[in-house]
Image (cartoon, rainbow, N blue to C red; front, side, top):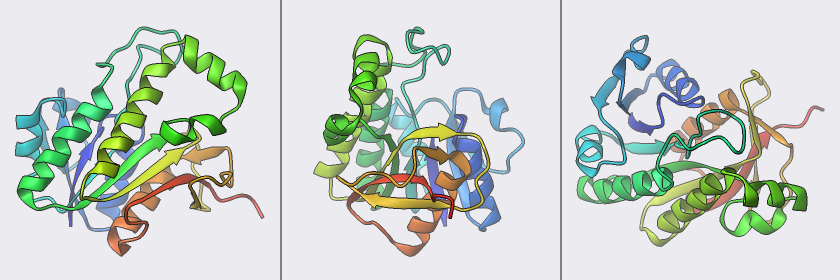
Length: 219
């Protein structure tokens, strides 16, 4: 299987690439600077998923799409200036949906965030305040727009809303919680997200579902 990964140079992207290769899959990626991906044996299209023609070129021969893009900032400070367009996630998703229609590709897995779309009402008031007055709001809003795009499409999508993402390696895996229910944990390790995304694509699980995704709780 070949997967187009949007966000390959991001902090979750490398875990997905490594996991996909380990499972015997191929990865296609889009990158402004292909040098960032020089250590991986993958197909790279130079450019940005914000551009439709680039997505259409990169998706050739693929069977599925994973989107881990974010509206990135110049630092982790919530008030840091944006480094990406305010609609980076939704515009790229829209481009992918259009290209997938032309290529007859159905499977799309999206990394979203708890607090996006309908889940806004479930997050603590203090987080709502911080998001609302900082540049975090652009990512939350754009994740919500992507969710709307996917839900209106005919794709076999899975929207995975994550809590706080961690680079710490988790060997217990991730657990999905139905929309509207409290997540099992407050943290999702990026390696667990990668494993989960690839497994549900392989097994055709959680089709046209919006779920919360987090680390399995310690037992």
